[in-house]
Amino acid sequence: MHGKGLALSQNVLPLSLNVNHRRPRRLRYGLDCTPRARGKPIHYSIFSLIGAAFSGHRHWGPAWRDPAPKPAYDVIVIGGGGHGLATAHYLAKVHGITNVAVLEKGWIGSGNAGRNTTIIRSNYLLPGNNPFYELSMKLWEGLEQDLNYNTMVSQRGVLNLYHSDAQRDAYVRRGNAMRMHGVDAELLDAAAVRGMLPYLDFANARFPIQGGLLQRRGGTARHDAVVWGYARAASSRGVDIIQNCEVTGMIREGGRIRGVETTRGPIRAGKIGMAVAGSTSRVAAMAGLRLPIESHVLQAFVSESIKPFFPGVVTFGAGHFYLSQSDKGSLVFGGDLDGYNSYAQRGNLPTVEDVCEGGMAILPSLGRIRLLRSWGGIMDMSMDGSPIIDRAPMQGLYLNAGWCYGGFKATPASGWCFAHLLARDEPHEVARAYRLDRFATGRVIDEKGVGAQPNLH
Amino acid sequence: MRIRCPFCGERDLSEFTYLGDASFVRPDPDAADAQQRFYDAVYLRDNPAGPFEELWYHGSGCRGWLRVRRNTRTHEILGVEPARRQGADA
Image 1 (cartoon, helix red, strand yellow):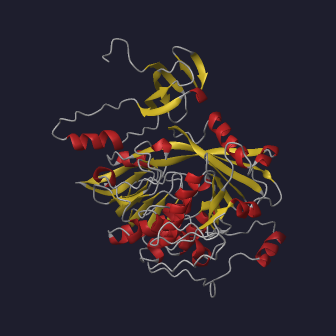
Image 2 (image 1 turned 180 degrees about the vertical axis):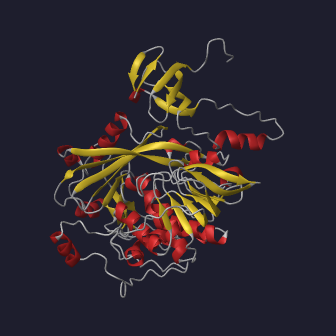
Image 3 (image 1 turned 120 degrees about the vertical axis):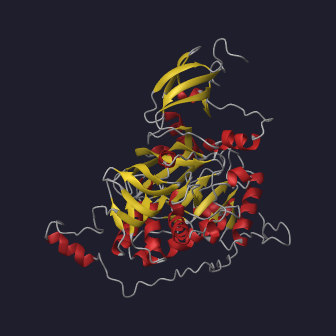
């Protein structure tokens, strides 16, 4: 189709078909993501598995400590999901702050960390977003070595399909923006997509597949393992992970937040970070804060397990649908928000129908498979579709919020940048744009350009 | 979730479109602090967990705007009435 690529101007890197993309340059944020597993203890192996089998698997030790809360800490992180635990890990590892508690109202990973579709990618357009998500991608690439834990990061590729010339041009723009930020992107024509995924519905009457934008470094990771890996790494450095400990109020002295009231008693701290996406408005209200966030329900679905069928992650460009196959063999997919405010962690049937229609439009064979489970997660929908990592207006309180439905892929960079903010009281270089006051000053980061209507982001 | 439209009866959720918080009032553009008031009104949300008054549009039915009181924790519909209340100003 376009043998010489889609050169837009001499100042823009042309996205070419079938060329070897340049290796993305190493980011300059002081990261060393090279594999370094040598010298680390092996916790689990085939031998420990066989050994434990002889004792009925009754003697596996816990991977992290279960301490009682101390009366005070240097830093409290509210929320024991991926973001909160990653924050604690990087506080301890990068900044040397180990007198840290992570407070979780249920068990760790029981919120949105256990309710996502496990996709990782950094295919963002806007300058405020792209370097942040690419930092996250870099951290994913070194996460297993860093945590010494198998988080099952699988760079199987994320392919966004396009169905019209206009959409192709928009993807060229996004792909060029990605490559100018040092992120890999390839534009594929229909023949190249057909080579990868021959069973898609290329001749669909309404939404013929013309090609796709591919990020080969994108893929999936194992959500539980991410939570457990961060928890074990943080706990081993001295972080207290306190489960079944719900925050019920804030301790205020003067204009400053000095601690939290919890179901396990008051706990004081110099700094308190909130990483409670989905419940941000409720926790912020305890501090008297009203935020640019609405809580919405997003549903996800898994099918029965089948043999290896779908090699990567694919998204439908004409509707909203995304699909991948888990290592257990289930097809994992999802689509749009239900569209109304909700804290219910379950959705309704019209959205199920809409998601399945989107799936059938690109993958008709999906109709022959049985749906196994579906569930809903509560999304922290911000007013521009981008997150907030910033100080709260009152001293002592810090916000990590507004992840919309892109929180999982952001987990490592969210923790990295939030730890940086908590430790140094200044934003990390790649998270500078995620200010709370950007809505008042007009510096919104709106990838889709839909304005302050969160159910459309 | 089904919404009992006061004109059409109980109908499936797929007939309705969501707008959001029914308490939105356009601020006075001539107020001295109009910029702050518009910021509050456009961007900030109460986002309650529990009963919530919101606006729904019955696009596949009577095309009326409805004021729905709904529990955001359970999706229980607590009350529905036309968005423009009887006797209210236009």
